[in-house]
Length: 267
Image 1 (cartoon, rainbow, N blue to C red):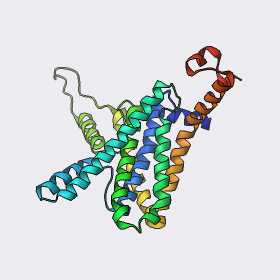
Image 2: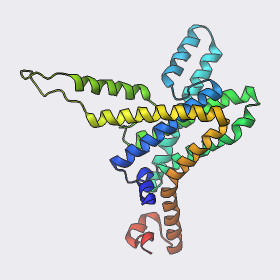
Image 3: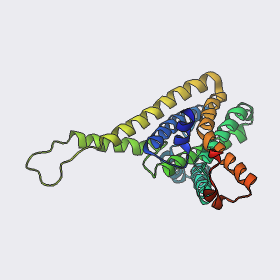
């Protein structure tokens, strides 16, 4: 049962429950990384609106280098999202079951790097601060694109502004009084969407609180449990692909002919 559940969360066959449970996990991780990253470098690395505003402000004040730094951080976020798209499309063309899990594994490896090397790199101030900001922005872009692709843009994990806006819209619909003589369809709130977005915001908030507390107590090592969590989410589809590739190798088959020759799980 646990293996089937993990396969549902990050496997190539998507269902609504798997999308939402994965989204809640990633929202928690995003909140933890964002809050821990702020304590580490003094910047919220998922807040692209703030970074773009900062770019404009620095330019208006003539602070060109500061504007360039904020712009490069935005580009790192974009690069992370682009990396996810490249990985997923590459894996889909090869009919891999781990098309989404590969990006989760990459995020886990980068968080491990941050957690293991952060304390050492902190001593190199000139390198550490900009490098860490770019790394965390890249990770946030990577993760947001994962759940966006998985859920077909139904779920975001770092874009809390959009989530809170949708919550407000649905609350407005819920409190709207439909009069009997009003024309057209009655105004009705999408309660399912409302509760999903409330859960996502709640997970992001709880992750932020726990991430900040953990970073305050144990420092950069606070990201290690998050990385292990991501590895657990990714490992089953990746293992499925490794087993399939070994089975194909043993039988001298290609990916395209595998469907006609049976399934390795049946042997």
